Image (cartoon, rainbow, N blue to C red):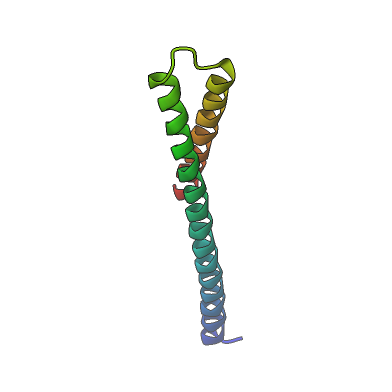
Length: 87
């Protein structure tokens, strides 16, 4: 195999890897975008629950507080996961 043939083969392999990486990057961005949109919906629910607990009645039930705490922890984890995917 000539040197030119070797470089052509290498060039084609690099192009193939680049194309595959491009597809994976596009899919990752779409995946992250979908994840973000889901988290934003949960963020609004969390804010509403927190407003109710903090500014509503003094006797917000234990269940409401636990639901808000769980939702907050899930949101924190979700946003951390997105940050890791974007790094």
